[in-house]
Length: 112
Ligand code: SF4
Ligand code: SF4
Image (cartoon, rainbow, N blue to C red):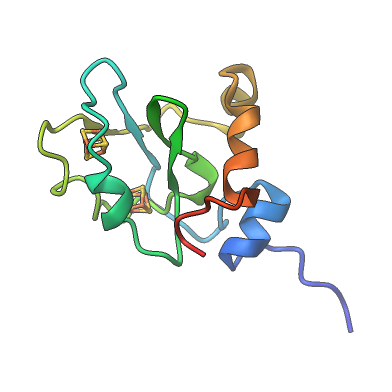
């Protein structure tokens, strides 16, 4: 049986570090200068996406895990979650988010 290499499940997306190719919406991002680190968005993100993590003092969204469902946006008390139409997997590497991939592998993965 051929191996399905598409990133359909969250585990597959974490393994491949890729978005589900069927997702049409852009991922969203947190403006860290405005974020008050309340974790409300983290709790609002559906576990099958599970895209939001505590990263040191920051709260971050891993774009490859974010479907753009927008459920986190109304949960934010300071409206600091924005669409990220310019995001590409190439810019993700250069933006230094590589170590973010340790977050879903940690014992603190909030969605497991
Ligand atoms: S848009 Fe949806 S998938 Fe993306 S971080 Fe917000 S709640 Fe999670
Ligand atoms: S809900 Fe808004 S303020 Fe709270 S952690 Fe998320 S982005 Fe930051």
